[in-house]
Length: 312
Ligand SMILES: C[S@@+](CC[C@H](N)C(=O)[O-])C[C@H]1O[C@@H](n2cnc3c(N)ncnc32)[C@H](O)[C@@H]1O
Image 1 (cartoon, helix red, strand yellow):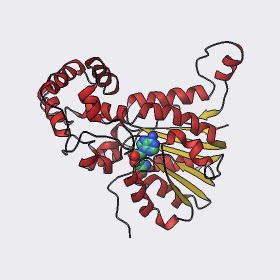
Image 2 (image 1 turned 90 degrees about the horizontal axis):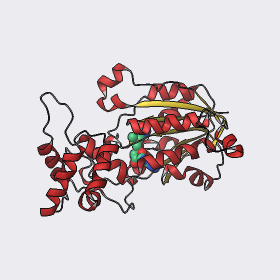
Image 3 (image 1 turned 60 degrees about the vertical axis):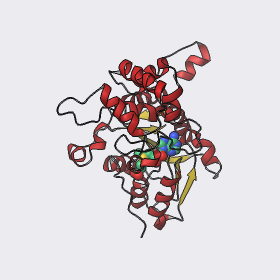
């Protein structure tokens, strides 16, 4: 028996319901993680011949390999970024797939590993890379980006109201010492922005989230990945995406709208026609949200939003 990964998959039932309506021979899980969604798909779609699981984190790949072992003849786990999904699947001889799923962001396993540097609760190096080959770390950003860039990062990606004070505090602190540990950054933010009575989230939550998004190029990967996924789907195939951040959900909503022929028309003639091209049908006019029961049991699920499209 493999180790049981400490990650609870979000909105499993809703995902199964939307994929349950179609037959799928091929499936791509672009954010394999602990393999929870992938396992549920394999268990409920006996017609499935091949499930490709992509993850950029080696630990996620090894944990999910153990968890999916009983389906190993159908599963291909590959190292890579889902933004390159078409090339990655083409290498396996797949040019179309029937189902694609993305569950954006970090897993609980990544948050729990102090050495990855994602957590303000566990001291570790200020790293935050999901892909160990990525040259950019959170330490690099915090210690060398100009104040204006830090302000922009904290305001736009963290949606943190105290972006000005926190950026200024970081720049002051780094004049005296290099900020290298997650605890050093978390303590500094807590000093600048102490929690108000009854506050349940740590004051550093939003800044850590912003750094993680930028270190891993998450918004860019999402936008590129959505275009790739829609291209890769077979007619009648479905794509589902879970996001945890309003910026991410906005990207999903906008790309889905554009690809369903309701995007803004820019340019004239052929360009305008291209923008009006109807490639998918949106199946979720509003995003699906986790049930109250799930929100109670798993606090991490509270900000989740799930959207689905079907390829025409
Ligand atoms: C929230 S977890 C997925 C959990 C999974 N659905 C489950 O049920 O166990 C997200 C995973 O996606 C991976 N990931 C995030 N962005 C990625 C990207 N652009 N390309 C490949 N993997 C990515 C992370 O390393 C992490 O393991």
